[in-house]
Length: 462
Image (cartoon, rainbow, N blue to C red; front, side):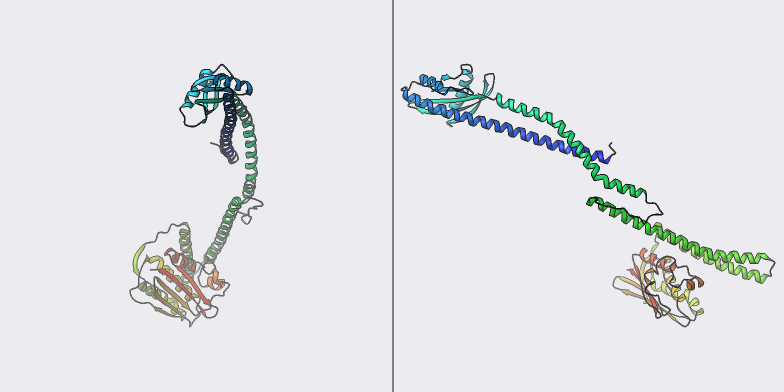
């Protein structure tokens, strides 16, 4: 199998050109043969008409002596290139050549039975070759006469042989020129592709910001280059997201690990009493829990990215789920003197993964409580709208600036980084909320006004 695209294009071009040239040659050969034959028939018909006219005149002068009139006509015409013969009432009278009398009589016999007075027929043998003969039948007195003008078709065959020799001699040269031209054309057409391949080989993971230069490439190659550049853009964004994700994850892991190491180093520096050890272990326990939540969140998002999370879909009542989530968050809200209100109609059913939906609502509530100041309020509302189930979590906290709103669902993003880290956030909660909503074919949106609070709305198809 031929691997080279350039060579394959050349062979396809050469095969197509060969078929086209062969078809054209056959057509031209047939056209030439027909033209030569038509010209011969026209010349013979004119000769037969002339011979008939002279024969009729001689018959009148010789008082109906057909043999003498035929001989006199042949003497007057002195035909050279063609053969002239005459017949009267089916009898052979005379011809300009004495050789093919039998063949001429056979041709004349076919003509006597035809209704047409002027015909062109094939003669099997004339001077050793196939021939064509034009006939003109007429009546002079009481005698039916036939004038015939014939000629061998050897001249036609000779011209056709010359044309065939010319074609067979020129075809190899034409195919060689076509092959070289096709190869040059394929090389020129694929030159931009080779240049693009060379540029692509120079692009590495550290230079994904580079793009292929298209130049004067054809439209199809421009489309290929544009598609490859779009792929590079997506890869660049993915690599940048991965680098930022690794950096943020490392930063988040470093903080609790540093606290744990510091506490243990201090505790082990000298002997301490039981109360001091309990205090140290309490700090270590808190940081370990924090690390456990972070690792669990990272694992959930990694599985989501890999598409290896299977929803455990079941029928559940969302009003009960929202109420349970509110009861779970109530102690944290009470500790911060935040009023938590939950409004939901009864018996709102939905088919989905209860564990993931519970985690989504808890993340929204946790985020609202964390960003609402003491004495504030958090409202949770469950509504049914046409084919959608809507969950709104509203707070009257600090709000989110417009420049930060488009990024709040990105991983490890914080509008107030110091506040979030101090209060235990990782910047992953809203990313998980968005993933859970989309896993259930839903969406999540944000409406926020700085200083007045925020509303996160989750829409799930019923």
